[in-house]
Image (cartoon, rainbow, N blue to C red; front, side):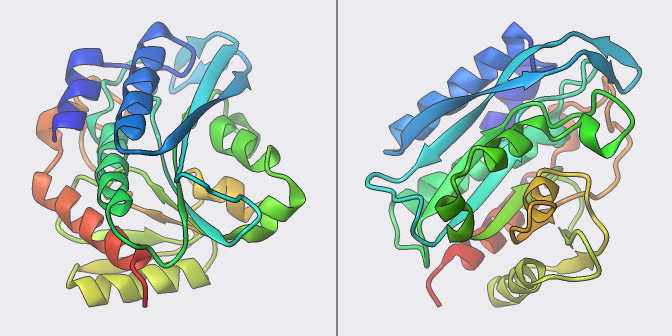
Length: 258
């Protein structure tokens, strides 16, 4: 919850091109670095538009990418990410400081244990919409995927996006279609970890979709509806620590050697 309180409380709304977003990205980068990862910032150019009824300017955002020391992107690996930005009017506790907080906690745990494959952790910029179409959001994850060389794309064995993961007592496990291998493997991991989880088909409203639409395997954790969505009411009190713990436990089970 410390990350949620800092991002949504101390920093607040983090539209992707603002100084507030930059402060949040710098905080996440420092945290990854302290955990022992090699950290890079990837520039993300975004157009002007309208985000949830509020005009937003063109500008530049960034992805924060953390790789383990000695990482070879052409070797099989996994990607775990969460978007760091918010719509302009929302402090973004559940959407999506919750996801970022779990990513940072899992990254810390993974740094001290063996995973079944190397893991790249990403805090994505500019996920939130800047218009009504499928091409008007997910700018950060699209930039990340587009920046992968062919060999690196072939090496991605699965991507999981954590997006709105702090509400409820059951974890939605989303797939872009009816079902897919990453979703099924996450549901199996939930069973091993003793975490209640339900399939959430036809789920394309998060950064996993940038991977799936490019032919890469991906799924989403999270999406339970809540009253403060995309509003000033999305404050830290909305987020339930027990649900964050469940999601973290599920994700660690998915990353663990089998």
